[in-house]
Length: 358
Image: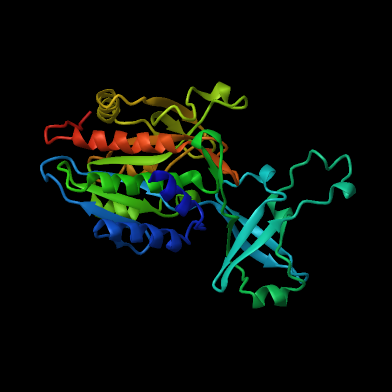
């Protein structure tokens, strides 16, 4: 089930601030489950499954959006210049296929890569800054591009793709965080008819833009506990081996420490009661539980933890993923199944007497 959900969602473009198509697909699945939902002014999609009002309320969330670009200029020649939106790696951009999401439909294009036969020695190992790059969508004039629906502000993403790999693994576009979206849908199905705490499921917006899109939903729900689903950096390739011990196919994991460390003084030191909860649930369910501590990344959980007069008890939960923010990220669906099971078991163990004051 998760593999099919992930594949469906990865093939839908949904740049930050333009998540409507992804939200509609998720809403259709909630309709099939018979679950009510609502959207706020920013576009967050929220579904509440009522539970024991004496137990701490829980919000489990993940983001729907993906990084990409915005059209900033259409040259007289019909070539298109881009503004970067989110942490797009410039060194991985030339020759990438993209899609321009116009009101008249999706248009394919390619980020140009200078012809090899005309590349001088000084250019061969140089990374071009994104303002120097352009998209070739086949147009021969600005008027032709505009007639096709391309405008300043048109959203652009990597061309959606899903590639099956050996051992059931998947490579493709926007694994970050359509994998989380698929887990959250699977969790919604798993919790139907179960007792436990009141559960708020939130598919959030604009995480890749400013890390704060979820805040209106969280402020409206006022949860006691927030569990965020996102990637964990897989460290089982030669370039990542020094960064940690998380492995693709090694099962779900938790973050014990995250800090941006690049100009943004924020991160998450998880609530110890939630770390214990994850560990005991994994043991009870005979699930592996990987552990991550990482500098250089940030999620919207970093801001949510400070809400309200007492704050929110927070924990980042994740799935291993390779090649983050590239056009083809890699995930093992078995890790997503394990993560769904882990969160389900954690929810079963949240009781009215659970203490959250440190």
